[in-house]
Image 1 (tube, rainbow, N blue to C red):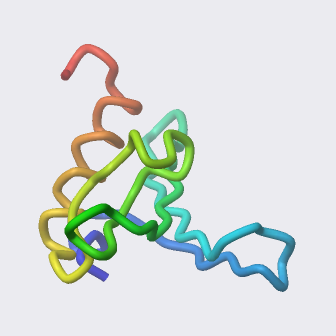
Image 2 (cartoon, one colour):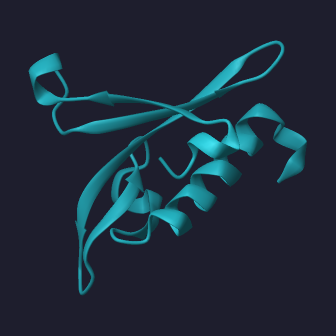
Length: 88
């Protein structure tokens, strides 16, 4: 929900649909293409749970669960970079 005002769209994907863990697919579209990022929730030592980039797994830590705003900012930055690689 935190990304929708910023132009992001989401699709929830669950085990019943063939995914190993529940996944939130977040994507944005531009005039010529679309980019996306899968987000999962994984255990984090000492923090309990955190949002992660599904492709990178534990190395793709975004923010602790409970801080959706921080996670949305991280996802927005990653999607901008994917859409416009020279903006990093």
